Structure formats: structure tokens, C-alpha cells
Length: 112
Image 1 (cartoon, rainbow, N blue to C red):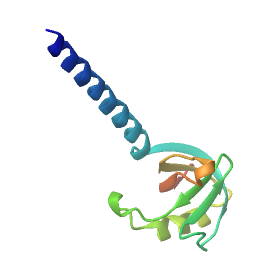
Image 2 (spheres, one colour):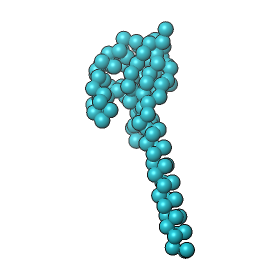
Image 3 (cartoon, helix red, strand yellow):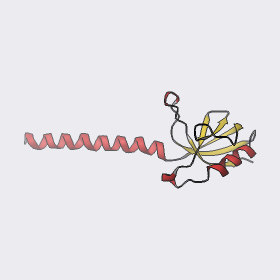
Image 4 (cartoon, rainbow, N blue to C red):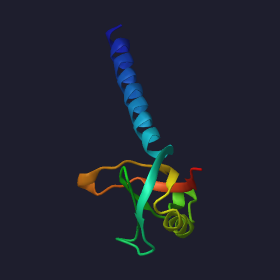
């Protein structure tokens, strides 16, 4: 009986860790939407990424092959066109300043 309760405890810990990792990855890969104003966007790349500055936070715009996102140039052109206007930005990822990590833009739409 002792042996089976030990196995149950190990299984419970492993299942708990799997759930934590799943929630952690879910928060990174699932896109969310913010409504803000674009303050700056340029067609020059910085460290292989396009940068978009908003009133709230800086964002990055780059191709993500694993997400089948290959239109970063078009999205950047849209950001330049909508500079100074209210927009709805769909993005994913995390902003971690000490690792120089930025959220990646998936799409930009003007708010009318």
C-alpha cells in the first residue's frame, strides 16, 4: 500500500507540472488584442526585427515560420501608414525587458 501511494504522489506531481507548463506556454502562444495609438514605426530593421512604438509599449514585428507568419513587411507598412491613429493590434508573446524580449505583432487594424 505504501508503494502505490508513492506512485500516486509522483504521478500527481508530474501532472501538476504538465498543467503548469501548459498554462505557461498557452500564455505565450495565444494572441491577444490591445487598442492603442502608434507613435513611431519605420521600415528599417533593428537587430533583424521591425520595431513599432505605441503609447503603451514597444512591439516587435518579425516573421515567425512556426506560426506561418511571413508578412511582416506588409504589417510594418500598415503600421507606418497608421502612425498617429488609434489602432487595434493583435499580438502574442511576452515583454521581458532584461532579456530584450518583445511581443510580436500579428495584425494591425485601424479603429474607426
